[in-house]
Amino acid sequence: MGFMGSMPIAGVIWQHVHYIVGLQRLGHDVYYIEDSIRQLYRDADAILNVCGTQEFNDDLLVSDRILYIESDPAVEQIKIDKGVKSTIEYLGRHRALFTFGENIGTKSFPVPTHGLRWLPTRQPVVTDLWRTNRSPSRAAVFTTVANWSTSGLKDISWRGRKYLWSKSREFLRFIAAPKKAGETFELATNIDHAATRTKFERNGWRLRCPLQMSVDYWLYRDYIQHSKGEFTVAKDQYVRLNSGWFSDRSACYLAAGRPVITQDTGFTKIYGGNAGLLSFRTLGEIVESVKTIDRDYATHSRAAYAIAREFFQAEKVLKSILDRAGI
Image (cartoon, rainbow, N blue to C red; front, side, top):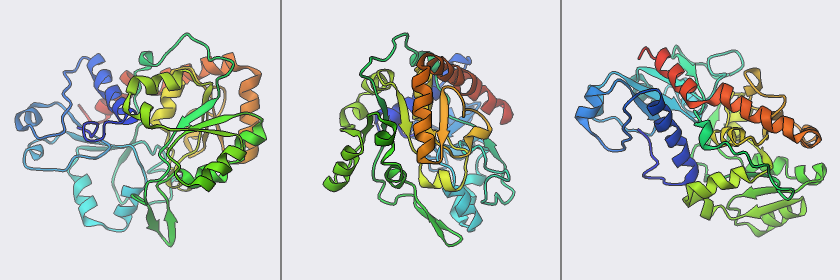
C-alpha cells in the first residue's frame, strides 16, 4: 500500500517501485493497491503500509499482517510521547513497526518510545536499475532535488522546541558551501522568492526548475546518473533529533555510483562517513569532503556503489523486514 497514484512524482514513484521489484525478486507475488480489496487483504502474507499513508477500514482490518514502514521519523514518536490517542491506536493496529530512523529506540535518540518496538530499516533500492558504466562529464556538478517549502505540514513542537519538517533552513545555513568549495552546486527546487534565489546564485548555486524531472521518472534517473554526485542537507527534525535517517534519493545516487555529501543525522554510526558517502555538520567539513572526492573520484564512485549494494540492495532490505516480522 502506498500513495504514488495520488502523488505521481518521480521520487515517490521510484520509492514504491523499489519495494515492488525487490519483493518480486524474492519470489513473492506483489500487488500494489491504494483502494480496498478485502479478499486480497485476507489472503496476503504481508501488507506493507509504505510511508504509513493508508487509513484503516473494515476491509483492511481482516489482516493481522500489516507492517508499518515509516520513511519520515520523529513526528509519530513525538505524538506518542504526547499521548495522542489516534496515533497510538493507528500504530497499534500493525503487526510490526519499521522506521528509517535507525537510531530510534537507542540512547542516541532523545524521544521516549513508551514500550513500542521500532525496528530499523532503510529505503530498498534495486541497484541495477541505477547502475551506469558512464563516467560523468567534465562539466558535471554536485546536484540534488528538493521541495523547498512544505508549508509547515509536519512541523512539531516537543518539550518547548519546534522541529521543522523542511530542508529550506538547512540549505540556508550552508548556502556558502559551493563558493567556499570553489565549485558549482546545482539545486533543482521551487524557490519563488527572488531575493532568496539571488542569494543562492551569488554563492555559487545553479538553480533548476524541478517540474519536468518530477513528472518523468526516467528523466529523474537520468539527472542523477549524469551528476557528479549529490550534495544535500537533511530536514531539521532528522538532524537535531539525531534520528539516523537517510534519504531514499541519496541511496539512488549511491546506486548510480555517484558519491554523496550529506548532512549527518546520526547514520554514520551504521554506515558511510568514508569513501563514497561523506557526512558533514559544519561548512568546513563540506569543503573538505568536496576536495577529498575530487582527489580520487574513481575510488569514491566505486565505493558509493559498494555501499548501495551492501546496505540498500532491495532484496536484502526487504528480506530483513519480512524475517523480523515473522513472515
